[in-house]
Image (cartoon, one colour):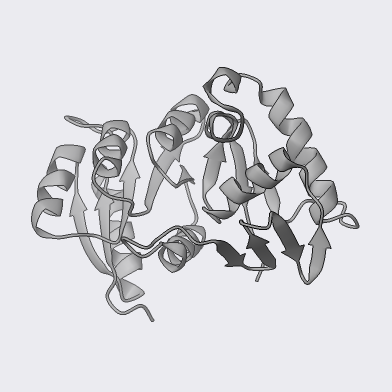
Length: 231
């Protein structure tokens, strides 16, 4: 049972707010709720959440602007709630700083699992960038450009290594095509999604040569990829 970790729920639908408050509180989380972005920011002046769950379509200040405002001052995890058919808006939210999204109508068990994962993986504030990344099945030596997966050394090209490092710094987080292309190849490459797919395919073959279905780099259709490093 979590030790009263703080979660801020932002949604203008009272029914959803009630369900989330009840479900999250029953798991031991300390919950506060707001019905729009402006109210959420007011709450955050005196009460600092460890995770935010926000709808996208709200009056006064929508979820996109709330993501931008939060991300300008904090790196706390943000999960957005999105109705089906809002693929473009979900991508905009991820680019604005959201870490993940859950599609409405959603299963509460899935949402709780996402909450646990993000709280577990949230980096300590002010922590220095590591020279070693050890997460799940992966051991990545940044200085030596060496990758080991389940004690098996994997030889990567420089770009494959850069792509894996960028993904591994945010395990469980949805990374958009644009964000990945910009981080690894630069701003002039942000529209070359096919180029990214080729490199992801090559990386998958090296990380899981005997696996038919990708387990470590999971495709988020029309959006990007999510890195799941294993147990």
